[in-house]
Amino acid sequence: MPLDESTVARIARLANLEIADEALASMAEELSHILTWIEQLNEVDIEGVEPMTRVVDVTLPMRDDTVSDGGTPDDIVANAPESERGFFLVPKVIE
Image 1: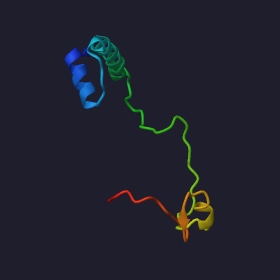
Image 2 (image 1 turned 45 degrees about the vertical axis):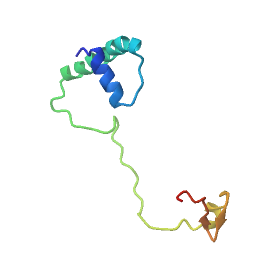
Image 3 (image 1 turned 135 degrees about the horizontal axis):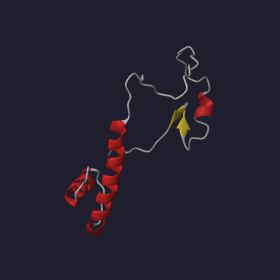
């Protein structure tokens, strides 16, 4: 799927990227090659192949989902620049 310079410029604008005008031609060529490689994936026969998230089937260990406060509030705020009664003190950001 060949891309032209105007399409690459539009993609760059949508992605909030700044690409110099002299680089648009080479970028269009590179993106066209990438899209050609992606189009080759349509040629792969995936009939009967189940979708998967991993190459190896892994069962993750489960644990009880219990709510706790961590049990160590003093340790949690120990490295804070400022804290008071177990809470972080931060500068006011809204006037």
